[in-house]
Image (cartoon, rainbow, N blue to C red; front, top):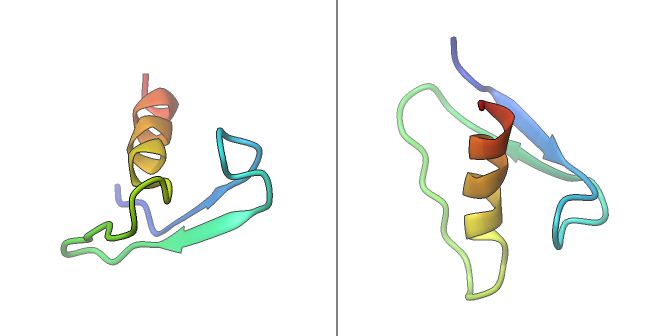
Length: 49
């Protein structure tokens, strides 16, 4: 099973819908400090408990 796309809304600092598309090889999250990179990882962990 692979995750192709994630839409985040009303989770921590993502109040408006935010969409992330993934490819089947490797993915890299890059952004400024406080841009939400760690929140995306936390959301993934919370989803698969």
